[in-house]
Image 1: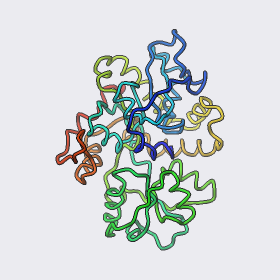
Image 2: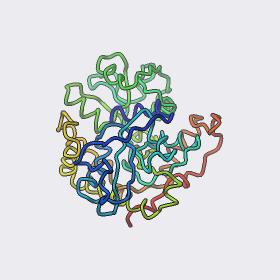
Image 3: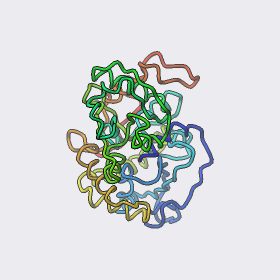
Image 4: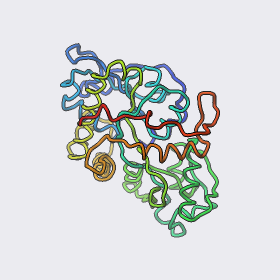
Length: 344
């Protein structure tokens, strides 16, 4: 999760996709069994992690197979899932509301079919021992360890202003080195996923103090999405619905029984996780506060939430069209997502 979100900005050009056997026979991702059904490819955004748990639950428990599907997990390459799905090299992929916004505005033919995380999974973070920083407003004049995303600075500036500050800070683009720079005191703040880096920091004795964007009035967002290739969705709606509903069932299971779901994730990817406690604690945190909507369901999306954060990015001039020109008006966000493939 740490690297996946942060590398998305440098992965906008389609590269060579190596269709590998994936994570071994336990995941069923090799796509070699003709009895398994029709092959559907899902492009991962990085190595398996708790953002993907519902997919692996569905695979481990045979729910994809029961739906007549042979699901092939495409390992991450130098091409982003937005690019792979938009080009038709994968039917589905893991994305993020911010990266999706940039890709969609630039012409990618993709649709969000399910919200994996209902809320921001990342927060503003400083070292826990920074007594001089008790609110984002205290970040004025400080140094942000960033990841190179076009929306990062506008978001951080607005959160600081929402908290009563001026929104003035310097940025050093470090990628995933931002976390080590924060621990070492070389930058003052960054934005980790609290259900991964936040827990990881505790486990390594580098606890963080974090601030939720929404606590200061910044719009909430669907931090992690399941997206589909729009032409394929229209051409094969039954197969699309079968995949999405099996995935939805997997994420609902992960929300309702995080311990069992975490075990499914680990069993599907033997040797991938050196800290089982990180996986179990992460899955538990996501289950308690991020996977379910207000009615206890997973996957649902609303126009209000799409227009809130994606609208903010457009309004701040951070989003460009296919010609590289900033959007001057908000698009019709209702055409960017659908809940029609979810189970009733």
